[in-house]
Image (cartoon, rainbow, N blue to C red):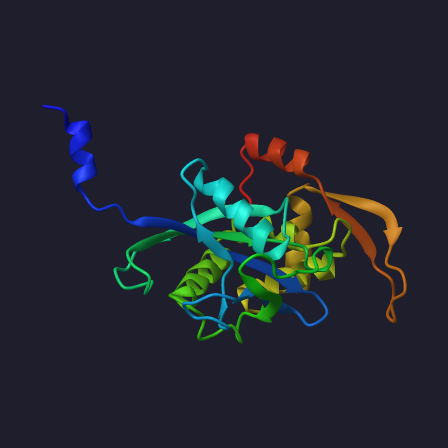
Length: 234
C-alpha cells in the first residue's frame, strides 16, 4: 500500500507567519511594537502584526524575514520563532495556521514604511496596541511574556540598544521590559561581573546632565564566557 498518496486525501490548511517586532524608546522608557495597517480585507484599515502566507519554496524563517522586508522595510534584525497559533476560527478566510516570531530592533535605526499590502506601518506602545486584527492581541501578549522571561537569562537586551550605550540606558531597557525598578548598584555590579562589556574611552555627548561612560556589548566575550560555564542570570 502506498501511504504517500493517502496524504493528499486530507485537507491541507494554509500556513502563515506573523512577526512581533519590539523596540524600546529610551527617552520615554517605553516598550514599542511595530504594527501595519492592513490595506486588504479582512480587517481592512485595521492595525495588525506584519506577516503573510508561507510560500511552497521557502522555510518558515525565510518567510518571516521576507514578509518583514516587504511590509515594513525591516531587514537584518534579531528574529526568533515564538509559538504556533492554530485556533480553528482565528482567520475568517479559512483554516490558517500561523507560526509567530518575535524580533528585536534598535528603535532609532529604522523608519518603518508600509509596502505591498500594508497601507502604513508605525510604532505603538505595547499598552496601546489593542483590538488588533485576527488573534494578534493574543500573539502580542505571548511575545511580550517571552521577552520578559528571556531577558533574564540571555543578553538579548543589547539588541534593543545602540552599539554604544551607558549603563543607565542598559538598566532602563531591562526595567522597561521587566516593568519593575532595579537597584542601580546591584544591577551594575552584576552586569559588569559577567565581563561581556567593553568600557570605551568615550563619554556621552550633548547631554544636560553629567556625561557618563559609554560601553559596548562584546558578543565574542559572551560566547567564550558561556562555553566556560557562565550563567547569565539577572
